[in-house]
Amino acid sequence: MNILSLLGTMPGAIAQGLIWGIMAIGVFLTYKILDIADLTVDGSICTGGAVCVMLLLNGCPLWLSLLTALLAGMLAGLVTGLFHTLMGIPALLAGILTQLSLYSINLKIMGKANQSINVRMHDLLVSMQFLKGVPFYKNSIFVVFLFIAVIIGLLYWFFGTEWGSAIRATGNNPAMSRAQGINTNFNKVIGLMLSNGLVALSGALLAQYQGFADVSMGRGAIVIGLAAVIIGEAVFGRFFTQMYMKLISVAVGSVIYYIVYQTVIWCGIDTDLLKMLSAIVVAVFLGVPFWKKKLSEKYSAKGGKKNAGA
Amino acid sequence: MPALDLLQITKTFNRGTVNEKRALENLSLSLNPGDFVTVIGGNGAGKSTMLNAIAGIWPLDSGSVLLSGKDVTALPEYKRAAYLGRVFQDPMLGTAAGMSILENLALAARRGKRRGLAWEIKKSEQARYQELLASLNLGLENRMTSKVGLLSGGQRQAVTLLMAIIQKPELLLLDEHTAALDPKTAATVLELTDKFVKEKNLTTLMVTHNMQNAIDYGNRLIMMNNGKIILDIYGEEKKKLTVETLLHKFEEISGSEFANDRALLS
Image (cartoon, rainbow over all chains, first blue to last red; front, side, top):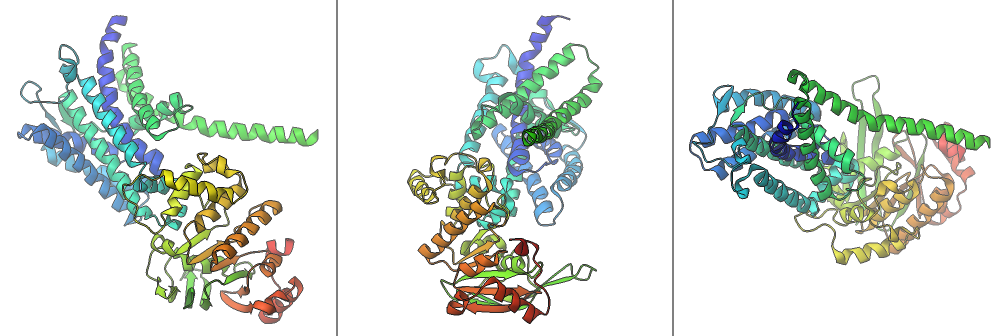
């Protein structure tokens, strides 16, 4: 095991972590702000990649391709939102239904299960080839970092506005929100659209980075997104209480996830097991707060008895 | 023009099942502007259901709801909110726990208004909120950026009350809003309620399980049973009421004993 070979994989891990960080911020919007576990993302990340790659292959300008990918993701979020609010389907199931139909849609967009795009023939924004030997402003880590900075800035502004605050209130306490005149259904739909728009944008960057879009590229994406949210919270949660700090911690959480991921691969673990390991890590981290609470209640109940006796 | 008009409203829950329950039966009620009405009744009498019907939580079977002459029967809950201030029984229900006191007040200050892309917390508003919080005498004016989830039940209920009246509502709906509090805190919140109602001359419907409170506060008292109003007492006559006469009247009219677990205990 050569430590230098591990270090050599780090720029790639960081770039990938940052790209998935955009996706994780999307998951943060639904999971933490709207209090919805939205499984649409497993499909919409691929939709973003598929739309972007197909447009680029057909000679569409880069920025327009990215924008269209974002809009395609928002459309997917709209569908989940309408399933949930208009048709009364539980949010989790609504997301699963959209995700399933996106599998077909993604195949139709690409015409087959996999479409590759060559960085030498197309003008791409990010690529694995852009990690070394390019000027810093072309370096993929720098480019994605800029993307994240702008996204966090915009989201921080939006969630500080009257409308953004109403969306936060919707996730916090829907009954109170309606009593204060907030259209909770509308805000849930908007939140889901924002989230999936970001996820699709992340997919568009990811497809460019790895040089292909694949119909299964989103499998388990929600778990990676949740892992990033949870890792960010575990590491920074104590000090980072402001909205923009939380968004930063999600992005950093995603980078940490990919650094650990690369390290685990470097340690020689069977890569077939990686998805299972990710799932176990997320399950453990989701379980810890629950048990912490349970144990502290048990403990304080005992303490109470002791005090009553004295 | 009456502040509130309920015209023969009827509501059935679980229609067509063995649990079918007629919660409101052809109920009509008219409130004059400035009326402070206390509502009492046994378990399942329809007190909360009547308030929820006004708030528009679900559609009615029949009948209409008019607020200051405007027919709001077809409006969804969030649109009616423009006219209503509401405080619930559960202190957790009226505020957003994960947001600060300041943010909660700012949300309430925009009830019924368009929520656009202007910044939510404006400097100019902060001073006003601070003053309002100081009027609660709970020391909350120094904790404006604290998350509401960190406050006690009584403090949360006081903040909810403030949120309900921060813009003068056409009707204030209080649904047993002191029932979940300890007696001392309940008394404080009730005093605050009375103060705000008088200061701002608010038309108010207050459901309570405490018969003495129902007699002591407000200018009008209504008693409900089986989804109907069975007693409606105003002004001078109301002032002469005692808990005993109320219980007696109830038994006389309904032909049954007054069954409200909490009312009998308190």
